[in-house]
Image (spheres, rainbow, N blue to C red):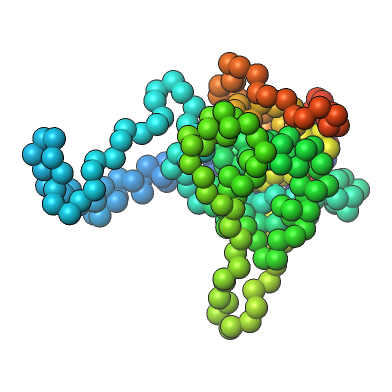
Length: 289
């Protein structure tokens, strides 16, 4: 477990070196343990706390006082889910890069996001927001998402899609809308005002976070914090409808971002005259902390 979490040891190890190979093997073992733990929990709940099954009304009718049956789920086999597919309360952060990282390596400073922190949820919102709502103004986007938040984010919503073409919004959300929400009504045990939930490259390990998204000029660095403390870059020009994997073990700093399914039709381009972001994946040091 300690090897899998890295904890800053051998931070200068080169890809393919024995320390890096040990960390990769331990990370994959950690993923297996996490899957096994989820399976055990599902079995226990099914055995000891099953959901009650209401009696079925006659075919074609609904029970008195109940709403009509729900329509079938939007997601079908072979198609990527929309942003509104059920998601876990996965803790993450959004940050801007800094020049104060360990041993001169670029660090980051950001803000906590409480729910739905997986790449399949955050990346479509962030890529679309950069292109349309903020018109490729990364500084304005960073101020809104990081600097101007008093405590932290509860969740990111479809208000980040403002200005995007309706067809793109519908493809990402299935036509539903929900607002971004901040953690403004927290109550601390001693009644004191809650502290701002800042996340840095020095504190991320201690805050039990699972994913990090750093807003670089080149693109979004996605960090699977259970495995590494740096990650691959998703270029700002990436189509927001691209379906990315949520498997933490697949987000390696030495491999391209894991795409499940690429969109078949190119996404609409941003307004003419907007600055074109840099392309490509920049070189990384072996580790950040």
